Image 1 (cartoon, chains in turn green, orange):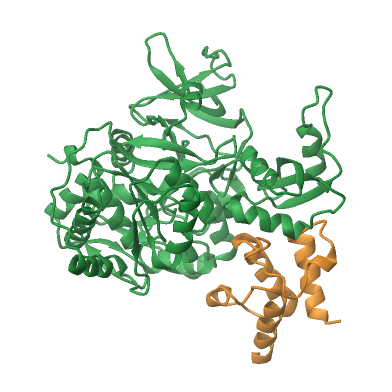
Image 2 (cartoon, rainbow over the protein chains, first blue to last red):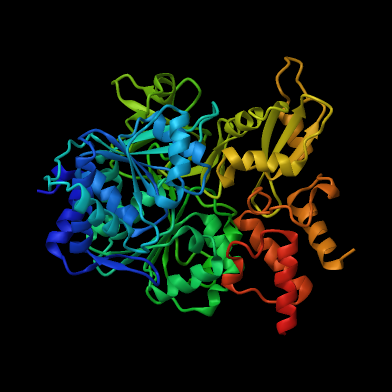
Length: 523
Length: 84
């Protein structure tokens, strides 16, 4: 029985069943079979155990997208720990905050960035042991590093640890409205519920080749990582540089014969616009999933005009529930009279309701907040009791329903349509951005007296993030200096597009910052 | 006064730094490290360069360094023009 090893069991089972099949590859780089990936993650498990990682501990990752990253994830899971991936492209200070917040037992990173990261952690008073992979050893940095360590300080082999379904599998941090990222705690049960739904919804087979485009700290990665491995299929990793380069992306999808693609609409749009998609043939491509943000139908049609044959799924769900509703775009629908897609029906066995501000169901067709109950729903936020209390609605039977914060309508037959947000969260390239976190980052600049941030739609269906800042002195900050300050503490997708330096922020009659007025000025 | 540099400066200011004082965007201002150019604005800039200066970019041209500053963009475009 595999279930008692949780997510690691998916790999262990496939390695038993089909040891010689290709499990994972990097375009133009290394490939590992199931047996090899299983063995490498076993050695990582032994090393992490030797470094003190035990069941229930957190293992921090700050790694580029790589086979080593995947082996590290499975190594941590086999040790009974959960993994906490942070963005290697975001400022080290943000990653260090996250790893300190959840008190990781060990950090796995790359030699090239290890010193800076260690220094940031030390500033916060955290001194976890750091396993730095030798990044000169392309494609086999982990294997080489483990071999070298084994010579110096042998780690005895230990068995993989059985887990309970409610044990934590991973913690994914998202933007927090109070100015600090918050950790979404997800269990093996949460992940398994979603993975099993994927198996039913689009019937993956061992002959499939899945893309892994999203970084591991983004919850799209859960489908990418575990669905192919469960089914003995192949996973192709799209690294950070490749992932942003539309020309190379199109060529790679064709060349690697990707059959299941999953990304944000932004990336699909980027490929249709800049990727010269039509230059290649994609006979293997059979499923395209998109999620993370609204896909404007005209942009979708530009993709489908070239990729004519695959099935298209609009997957919806916050990190707290992973995908919880899904909509398959009808293949024969010309989409002439629609501007956005529905988000579709709830993913069974989860349940959805549309409620008003008092938690009461609204009539069919009326807008309200989508709340979700079921096995997909997170255990809670890491160490944030107040936000946990606010995140859930408790019904008369004591069941907890997660407040998505998304306003939807339901058409009477279980299909939901997304209408907007209840709060100040926006989506950028699929990432959640709390405007309050940007404001907090700006306010940390010593010259800034106060800052307010708004998001306004742009003509091409995108979003412009505009920051208004008032300075403490007459010495006005340059916009370049403001961009620089922002990019030192925020991930790239959170840096405002435009800045306006103002004498003072406009106020309403109740002395609140007049965001409505600022939105008017920003559009 | 160098025409290509001024064209670049104007384009970057108008599109990615609206409201910025022209004197703050220098020939050697770091465009990537300072957060002025991200992946999407880089693609927009490349499309502009291709159309304005009649050159074609290869995927490898976008590697770090080539588009680091106004100076280095000018060097890259000029070397492409010289090749055609």
